[in-house]
Image (tube, rainbow, N blue to C red; front, side, top):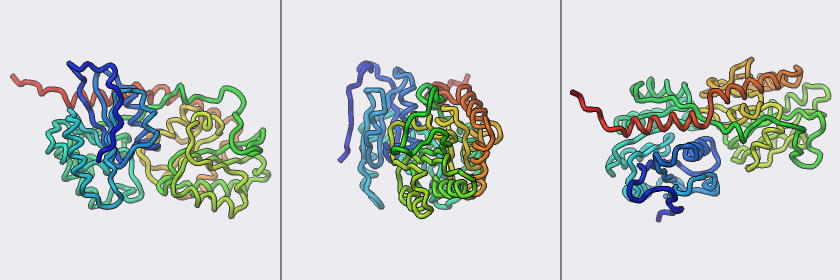
Amino acid sequence: MLDTDISASAGVSPLAPAPLIVHLIHRLDIGGLENGLVNLINHMPPERYRHAIVCLTDANEFRHRIRRSDVQIISLNKQEGKDLLHYLRLYRAIRQLRPQLLHTRNLAGMEAHLLATLAGVRFRVHGEHGRDMADLYGLNPRYRLLRKLLRPLISHFIAVSKDLQAWLVASIGALPSRVSYIRNGVDSVQFHPRLGPRAGIGPQGFLCDDAFVIGSVGRMAEVKDHLTLVRAFLLLVAAEGGAQSRLRLIIIGAGPCHQPCLDLLEKAGASHLAWLPGTRSDIPQLMRAMDVFTLPSLAEGMSNTILEAMATGLPVVATTVGGNLDLVHGGWTGSLVPPRVPELLADAIADYYRIPGLAEKHGARARSQVLTEYSMMAMADAYLAVYDAVTAPPTVQR
């Protein structure tokens, strides 16, 4: 059975509907990849393309962030482990939708290019948005073989970081002319610097008047390595005289590493200095309560949360992995440190509360960078250019 969420096709002429793009993802839930997809659909001209989202598993309330009323969402309800019947459900969904173009993202949906070819979909695009713990460096031989075997079926590749772009060419064998590097975009209106006093957040008594708030936002999965951030925070509290009166830690997100982080804080007697509330819907407001943003990931594509922090006017301390190197300019808009080294992460964070004005200076530069290089419309235009080029009729040679 397929679960569908179909709203009225407002604004689409039944006589000449716009071409349909099917976006295949694992699940429509809170996450950087999913947030990027929603932003793309919301900012593309509605008269140019229609959109449908096929979820290998399912979709939750995150679907309500889509502002268009003509987007169909299909859940294939794939079971954990081997579920061979989901291939049949996926093939039927593609045949039912009859898209002009299929756009998959990351490894989870890549096999759909074979099914789409069999179903008669002429144009096929694949995006690489980052890696997980199963293949941190893109070296897994089985995954590389699968990508190479499917490569001839893919019309064009999209990479969200220069690191992924180079990897697609050098390791997967994609032709450079068939790989586009497209930066993520960020809503710099919704995410803006603090305009007045810090909002009261967290449990009663959590913040003090001169609090210095270290923050992070993201799935609390192993690849995000929030345990290293907690260890760095505990080093800062132990090293700085009187630091407990000022230092606070906020980690927004849910996932398997949530409880281990809480346990580590409790064991160190520092639970009262940290707030880990799980998933929240008020991220812009919470970011404006932070003084420095941290992302201790082991792997990244192009982090939406880094872009949101930069738009908020925060300096960013991140690890030297993936797209972080494209976004954070050490000593100018933030700091870059090696992954899994809490001592260096703590030192980089410490500079921002030890050196007066440094956080504000780096944060202002970060917002300026976002405004000039990472707008939503620039991202939407770049994807639109790829879709148009891929689906354009071939030129006639004379």
